[in-house]
Image (cartoon, rainbow, N blue to C red; front, top):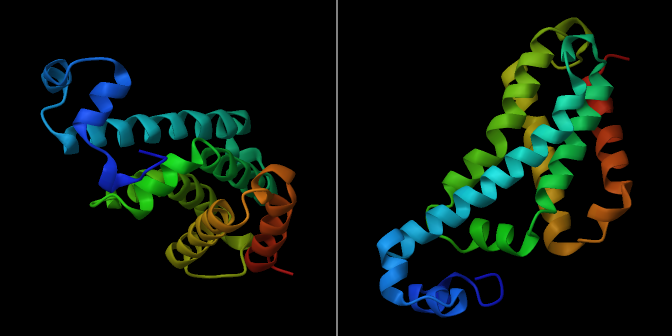
Length: 175
């Protein structure tokens, strides 16, 4: 699917590539949509495991600075978007009902940000917590996704992470 896109993703091609009969494939996946959902779910779970790998070292985040937490969230977001970027792009751009993927992508980041920032309101420049979480999450996701599409080399150098951290820390922190 990553090479030819969603329109050419068929159960016949999947069965052929997997080296199984179409009947065997249909025993597990009754149609293209169920196969696609399983693929998207597997990809999302893979991304969540990787994100957790980056977020777990934070331990009890209430003892961490805003910059430390933000830096780890950015690292996690960059890392998860680097997991099979071709598949990620197809799932987000070509697959109908890809809202499921978008929701899976952002749920963890939003929850971590909201719970953490709620306890740091006195250090924050913006006053509306929900809007702040929305802006941070969308900024991270949009810039990383843009790099994934237009400048994938930026996901490897660390420079994008540094610039995102500088941008968001200027937005977030009181002077």
